[in-house]
Amino acid sequence: MENRTARATIRINAPTERVWNALIDPSAIKQYMFGATVFSDWKEGSAITWKGEWQGKPYQDKGVVLSVKPKHKIQYSHFSPSSGLPDKPENYHTVTIELASAGDHTDVLLAQDNNESDEVKESSQRNWEHMLDSLKKYVEQ
Image (cartoon, rainbow, N blue to C red; front, side, top):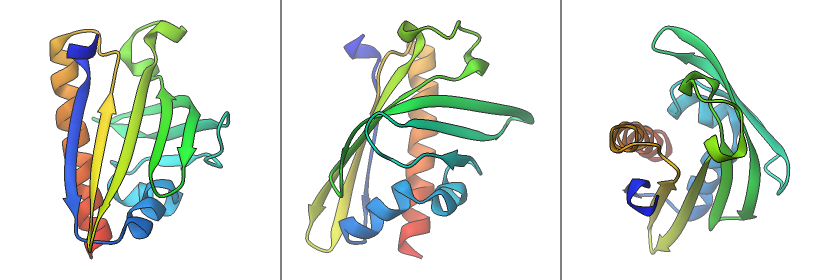
């Protein structure tokens, strides 16, 4: 499945701490992540839930926070019932977001594994690229 990992990167002109805070603050997330309302305490092993509307349909996705290294990396599982797949471990994605500080800017690297087809991978990649663009605009404002 490695070749079906969606990847997106962006350089944000802001310190890593500001980017990190935007990644874990529910009020910030709502501004750049397609209007999603996120519930989590961002501690390893804790649940995470996303609620919102996508293409006119309400959704509620879920996952678990797998790893947190403040200001460096966050990793979580993600399952969307709208995928049409059964809620089984093999149908969850792992999303990894890594931050690399480079002076007055921060490089954000995102990967989402376990995409079931090349088409799904490409769609996920486009969505993540859009989300990172929105994150950049939010943090740099």
